[in-house]
Length: 383
Image (cartoon, rainbow, N blue to C red; front, side, top):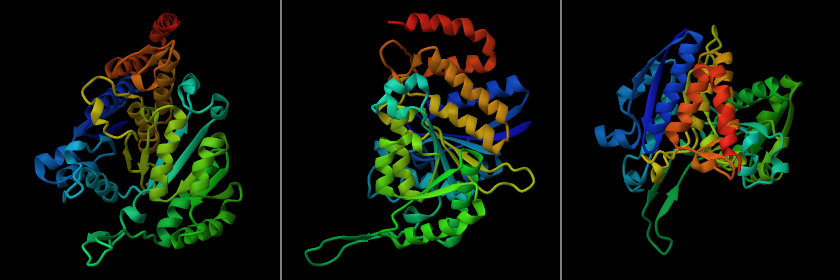
């Protein structure tokens, strides 16, 4: 297979982790006989400094011409002024809309080797394997009007944000959730705030209308506050969670703590499937953000980005065996005792970004040659 991949390293630790995502993809290409072409674009704070725009037209054009996009992160203290007319996050929102990627998938799987690194009790984490499907291009992040204005009197300044959804937007993300649940364990949890919000009442109504078309999927409804509680109380009971943009943003960061660190979680933002091939345009990024406090220190965890490349291979390129190979390489490295600082614990070997990335790439290049080395690392890591 020949495929073109746009790389958007972005800000903070983005360039460090995207470099290892690229190396993982190159290793997959060599091992399985694929030719991946890479082209780099700018986005976020760095793009603002260079061009005045968070998403330059050339970057969006590059992404539209590519088979998939691998993004690092955007933002940092340098661009945090809330009064600034252009902010790095506008580049990310613009890219999502420009690529028409409406479904954000954030899988949460607790690696057995990391159970004791989480702040949640080990027995609660047993068997956790869920996916949050977040609607990505509608809701309060894109609603208009959205503005702040001065007002006379004691109340001071005023502000408004608009939560807006159409029936078509809600239906397509719910169908995505139903289809995904059908391919997994058959449970779809639709999360809303239907006791308060009119938008959520329409969301729940459409979910109920669609349910008879998916008789093999069990549909349950949860209010977002109850879902936040149950994600900590009984996370293993969830299979697929589908929800709107703002709720999904918050719940997925909470769910990241089940895995012990945001540095372990990938994400895929997908558009509608191409009718002939079944492949989907996709924007792929780790969920951890730019982490400017550790940028350039060889401390960032590259595993979320490397696992993100597995989603890229699976959903945009249709390469399931190759995606599984990436995930197996990450599992092997964790089993060998390698840990970056965010997931380090007693009895393991703490390494930096470079060494962790090298360990995964080595296993991708030649899984058999790494077995003896894994055994040596495991022995060294014993207390």
